Length: 413
Ligand code: SF4
Image (tube, rainbow, N blue to C red; front, side, top):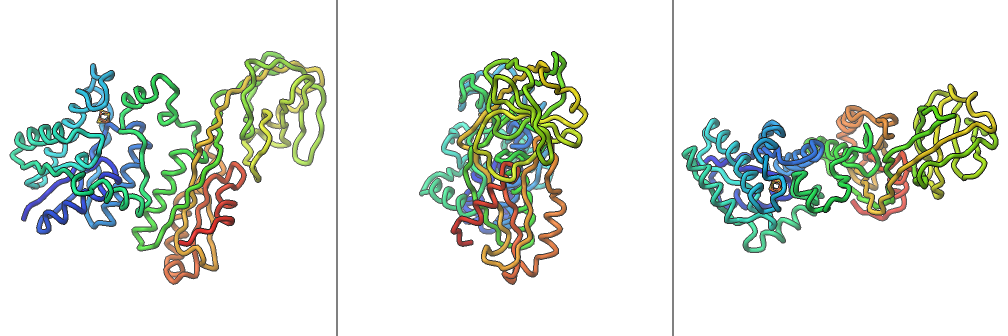
């Protein structure tokens, strides 16, 4: 029997290519191999691996996860950083990945290799074929050069990928291609804006995908409901009292100041759970908590954007009227923010177990994934019978947006 090892780079490219291989080689034993140290950053790499695992589970193909050898990849493409996409760096990049696939195939007794990279409309089929053949020959293997794009392959891939609600990346993988694509602009894809799972972030999506992978492995139906919202990222902030920097947090959706704002304390007003510091000249406010400093999630979306900073109760005595303050804030709004709810089970199920996927920037206020997985496992029977569902809402910390969207949408899942 033919034993084929398939190099896989992502779930989207694999979703049709693996089916096609099974169709073309019905008697062959097929396994996958995920070796992609070209994907940056590591969270993106994990996200693409999880989606690959989901696809392989659906099709019933075992997939091996190779080590993430980022240093090796960076070393090998040294000197080719400025090459355009489809240029010399890409040839070397294909070479590294296919060579490792061939080595593994040889070790484990496979007789042929191939790659789902041949699915991508952005890849040069002839280059892949040449590289694949050379590498395979070196290890005494056959390279299966199938142009998966032919005969409506792309349309089939798109349809299957949509049905499976796969994560669809918007760049090939490496930081060098991304820098070129964005032409010197800020590249948010390569940055983590906090230590947690911010609403609309890759980390939040990763959380959802991990839960989905688990729920599907238990045979449970899952549906991801995506929604858009204006997201916000804090780039930097400074608060100085009489020229001395102090620890603080910033309330979501605070807009940037115009440079450094120098002002004095006008008055302090007492409110239920905090003191509000008002300034003489500007609308910027400072909340002094009655407890140690912490970030504060929003219960409702915020419709004003004047900057609000937060300090802990240890600084209460420092804000006397007339005190000199220096404030600088840089934040970014993104109208293309996107988050998602995950529904495990049927939407109309009477009982609901609720969680949320995001956290505050410092990682607090979130849910431990183990708790979500346990709840899904414990309620498996009730979910299968349609009595219960588990819903994981996105974008909670910015005003319960996911829950609001879920309750007001008319999805039929
Ligand atoms: S653009 Fe894609 S194929 Fe080319 S080097 Fe980067 S990750 Fe590899």
